[in-house]
Image (cartoon, rainbow, N blue to C red; front, side, top):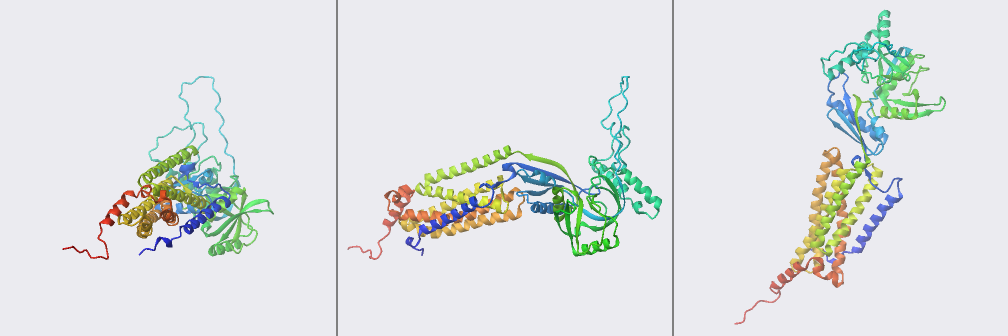
Amino acid sequence: MAAPAGHLRPGRYLAFFALIVVALYALVFFTGSGKPTPKLGIDLQGGTRVTLTARNPDGGDPPRESLEQARSIIERRVNGIGVSGTEVVLDGSNVVITVPGEQGDQAKALGKTAKLGFRKVVTSQPVTPVPQPSAPPASGTPSSAPPASPGAGAPPSSPANGGGAAGAPQQQPDENADEKTKREIEEARSLRQNPDLLSTDQAKQAAAAEKAFAALNCDPKVSDPLVGNDLTDKPLVACGDKNSMKYLLEPEFLPGTQISDASSAYDTQNSQWVVNLNFKSEGSQIWGDFTSKNVQKQAAFVLDTQVVSAPTIQAAILGGQTQITGRFSQTEAKDLADVLKYGSLPLSFESSDATTVSATLGLASLQAGLIAGGIGLLAVFIYCMFYYRLLGLLTILSLGLSFAIVYGVLVLLGRWIGYTLDLAGVAGLIIAIGITADSFVIYFERLKDEIREGRTFRSAVPRGWSRAQRTILAADAVSFLAAAVLYLLAVGDVKGFAFTLGMSTVLDLVVVYLVTHPLVAMVSRSKSKFLSNPKNLGLGAVQQLGSERKAARPATGRPNVKEA
């Protein structure tokens, strides 16, 4: 048996809800430094989408396992650097990074391989500038020969790049692009990682080093096919010191995976930015043994086949703490520390595409979403006013209060956990309008059922609520479970849809319990003739039917006796 209507105190429920709203918007307006608006995704406020194309060392297709590992590491870098609202997903052999707002430049740096290794320096030499070809002498005789090809005036290609002499007849390639890339990588590696570089035969070693040094082009404008993923068990010729030096290095003796932590700091004594490294226990032992045996010798810190620093070891470095110096700027030091801290990528990546979504396009998407939501709300309002009348006004008021709570929660989630509202999330909010309205419909239809049984509106409210709340809880539980499963299994924009749908479903229960039911109870107790008129509540027909059914029932307590 349901509790009588007098046991419910609507004022307390409404006061508690008002307290929740006041506390929520106090947090919105008086905490945080941002604007009191939700953070918007790239499809609503514009931003940058960067596509990184993976390249395997042997030129073949990258393994799926390596791609997943790279995606996970890039995602950790995103979280560590603090770029909010960024999405990292796999698209075939590409990693797609989506960054809302004006943080696109950070996204372009997230795909750095950052493969660090420690090698002993055998020898080094300054880089000799590549001489530029002089212009051909002008000829006074006109020529009928066809114009030279675009590569005719270019300097000779190095063997590392698989090129020939400038101006030579171009030969039609008989291999596809992947095979060509693979061949160039192998040719470059055969020169820069030739085992003869460390041969015991001094003549062989000198010849191999001379050839490798000559072939290595340290001009940053020239693309070198050997980027990252160098063979750690082979010697290496690499550029360093801002491309002003070339180094001949022994095989790697300590991998960067032994780094446990990395941070940037300013060295006031030497007036330069440095990167501080902490090694794991095994790495600390290897580094301590190496520095103990190689005092006054150089150790190269090689990042993606580039020597970022080659300091001379002054004393044994024990304890697992050391520094990388390399004339870094503050930004370079921080970026290097971040990528080392969050892991080395197992593959090399090149930025194949960077698309900027304009704020104008995002604004158009937002306007389309708001228009769709407005049309949905208007349709619900018209239906409620036509079918439920004054009870429909309570529905509209409840929907407005539900939106107020959802809006405040979205603002705070954007500040606290970096949640961004995208177009899919707006779709979830629009769907939630129907779920919230459905709760009101269930309640009001239960009231009609009770009134059809002959009860008054006042007595029908507690009984109708007792039965309706079980149905509302079951329906919302199913909706929330579906949203939770979708959120756990989905990727990308679908997660935003599932999140807003699940959140709105939970807040729907708050509004129904703390606002809608207390307001209906207050109306049922009102002594106003306007509010007590069943026709104004959309209950005139069902109350008339209830009265007829009640009158048709036989009277209880007296036997029905026929007179003879």
